[in-house]
Length: 224
Length: 229
Image (cartoon, rainbow over all chains, first blue to last red):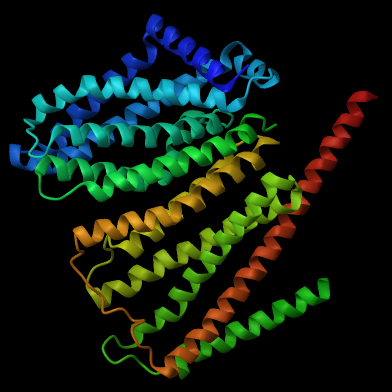
């Protein structure tokens, strides 16, 4: 029972369940759409302004949508005592974590891919900087949110008020990553500054927190 | 041990009284800012004490995950609470000072924002402790504490960079740039006093936490006894 084998199996299970029900994707998509529309009432930007603020709006919308998905994927494990079954099995805990994290990453990336054209339409966005940089920022940033989010969702699933606990503990820790994502996106869209530092910082953040999550997940899973 | 602690408390109170006297009466009035600058003698030592407390929290959390003993968890809980208290003092005294001197209550520069984020992280730690159930609390909280502490240098780095890109409207001259020796004197007394106050509060809170755990354990044992009869 290798880590990779278990990870792959669990990941495929999650993806298959999601494909059949489309719970997480649908709720995330609709929530993100609502956030975008509400922001457009709040800000009502011109094309020039929109390039400046779009970075922030996009990532706030994705952050909230990601939280929706994160809660759901762990809640799934609580039904039918699946999580307990996993704990007593000899399967390595990190495999479960990686599978959940990669699954969540996949869902959020799909969401971003679907929402991006919508943002372009609603805010009349045209990027001054190269688009491939936006994709790099999106991937690194999404992993930063998802890796911490998956860990904290596992943490908060055992508390009272579990739905509100996740944002409460995730957002403060994610602030540097959010800052990096927003500023990098704005820099690329407006073409006014180089996003290099932010991309490097996101990479560092990803590496550091993936390591910390992998180190601590076993303790959290078996905490009781 | 208890007498030693009581002696330490008395010493701390004396130190606090002396340093307050130093700060308010002995230290010279600042040239440009006037008396409002005296907040500095509370603001900076509070920040230092908060930092010490959060570091203690980090160490205690690591030790807890390693050894799983009650004492380190109790110390983690105690130091987080005391640290948040001092951090709150920093965040309140700062704007009180800033308003007359800078003309604004708040600015999103590196230090202020990092302090705010630090406060947010440790408040979320306290929320997690409050909301999690029974035996899990300790492990979950310890894990979060490690995340929080690891995050702090990253936060500072990122906001520093952010602020060099977007400089804030007010650049305070920095009251630490060359402190008059008479002020330095008062400052160090206050630093010592606040650190001692922090230690006293942590020890008291730690004892309280240990007692609470013991009471809970006794209740649990009694309940189990009752069931088996």
